[in-house]
Image: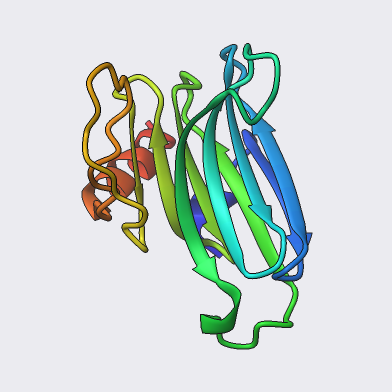
Length: 147
């Protein structure tokens, strides 16, 4: 397992693909990370929990996996969210491997699937035109947990 997953500021859930819901709140209000898999795919959401409903509070969404493309799709998995010390960044792990990174301060997210990507809209506060994976962001995040 990745060393970052063994630190104290982590929430986790054991689940089987196709049936999961997992929420992790930052200690900094209003930031929340939500992982949801209702059958065909698993998505991760950056959420502003000050909104009246979770759906209205979604700032960004990322595809984590399609169930059909997983090796051993019926095997139990461990999902975890690790928060930065300042509560403004989060990394989502499955079985100890980082799958997504959310930076609430910079208003951008990254995931291994780099999906979905949308054209920028006037007034968008969150960058949604790319979710391209950035290994350096993960290394920097994990390195900062130890200093």
